[in-house]
Amino acid sequence: MKPDIHPPYRHVVFRDRSADFAILTRSTATSERTVEWEDGRTYPVIDVEVSSASHPFYTGRAKVMDTAGRVERFQRRYARGEAGR
Image (cartoon, rainbow, N blue to C red; front, side, top):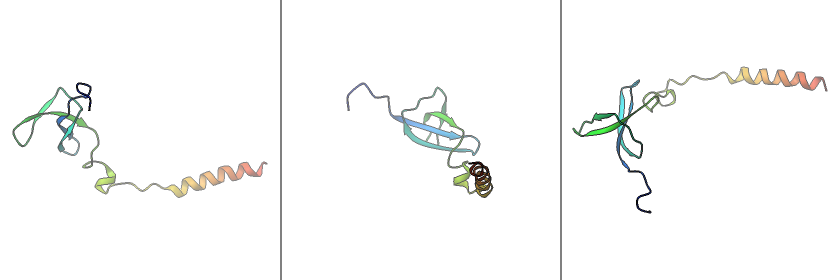
């Protein structure tokens, strides 16, 4: 790696406030806000809207979409168009 061209890579806390979930990882992302972690050290914190703790796919609360209705609508729309040809 070339020296002095890469951003600093350090520990950062990513926090999902809606699920009361936080994870300490390494990143080049920066933030002015800080939080005290479980080890007693202070780290920059980045608030995220969705994480694995709140995303419906990972929590098992995913909604099943009614694709049959969409397909039938599509077929009706284009079946009508072919009759005019």
